Every structure is written in structure tokens, then in C-alpha cells.
Image (cartoon, rainbow, N blue to C red; front, side, top):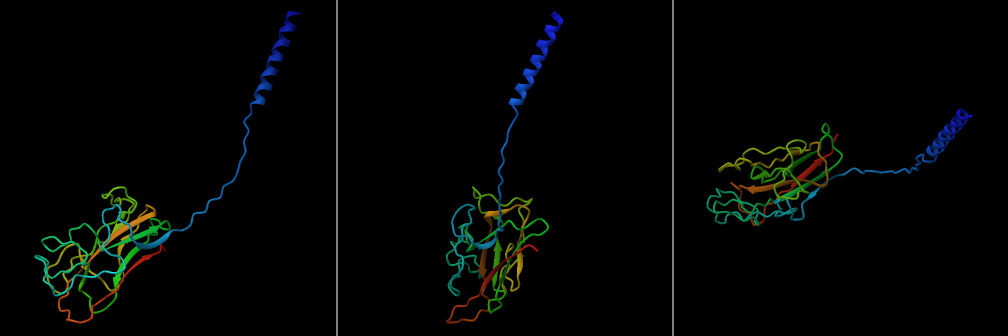
Length: 228
């Protein structure tokens, strides 16, 4: 009789354990979510003064210092934005640019980059205006020293020496072309929120420019080409 009693008790314990496990089985509920990411692809002018420390002096209109006025010492016939502060050598020293171009995109890849290009209209100021590209910056940087990284940040195409029709040349400057010329090629990093900032400055060497009662003018065009 003892053996039968023990067997009955063990069976009851196993059955109780099985019932406890079934009661603790995990349960779940699900819901679906749909997210749409739009294409960001735009070009514009920097309008706020914030890091990086290359705020623009101008944007859609630039006026050069009056030609024919006494040139500062060391200027060698170069004229700059009339809003620029010049040093004793006649060069801008306010750490600003003339125009800050903002490029935003999430539509590019490493094999299909976008390009920022520049040109001027063909007119009487051909070969008299030079341009300088101040690198490529993360417009959302928290400090004034955050250039785009060498890997993934894209590539800047800097111009060659410019001296106008005559005069002293300066490295880092180039003749403003009349055909679209690439100055920035995107990398793999995405800058669709704040954008990539390209600071650009200009100079005028008006050798041989005839005196006129009417101001000379030209149009500078910046073009951001879509990935293809």
C-alpha cells in the first residue's frame, strides 16, 4: 500500500507544475507604423550668423569698392566687397565671406553625388573677377572649427591662381568662369537638416576697364545638380 500512495502523490505534483506553466505564457499585441521620408534637395544662401565662423557680408547683391579711388597699401590693384574690413596690406581680415551657399540633400550616394557649380555671365567683366572657395563646412556645427570630415564629407575643388588681366597673382584664387565649373562634390555623409556650407569670396582686378558713368555689373550663378 505504501508504494501505490507515493506514486499517486508524484503524479499530482507534476500535473500541478504543468498547469502553473500554462498560466504564465507570454502574450503580445502588435500595431503597424508607416513612415515616409521625403527627398531633400535644395540650394540657398546662409542668412544667419552662427558657427562656422564664416558669416557672409552679402548674398544676392555685392558692391565692390569704387574703382579709381586710392588703393590701400599692398592691394596691387585688387578691389573687394565694399563691406569688407581690410588690413594694412589691403586684404580682407574680418574672417567673413562674401556669399555663403547652403546645399542640403539626402538624395545622393557615393556613386551618385550631387555637384555645386559656379559661373558668371559673359560680359565686359570677363577675366576681371576672381573667386575664392573657403572650404566646406557643416552648417549645423557647434563650433567654428568643424570642417567637413575628409572621409565622407565630400570634395572641394579649389580654383587656381588669379591675377586679372595683369597684376600680382594670388594662390587660392581663380578667374570666375563663364561656363559652369564644379566647386564641391558631395560625399557619403548626409547633410539634409542644416546643410553643407560653402563660403565664397570675390575680388575685382579692373585692368583696362573703361571709365563709365554707369556702374558695371555681372550675374553670378550657383547651380546644384541632382544625382543621376
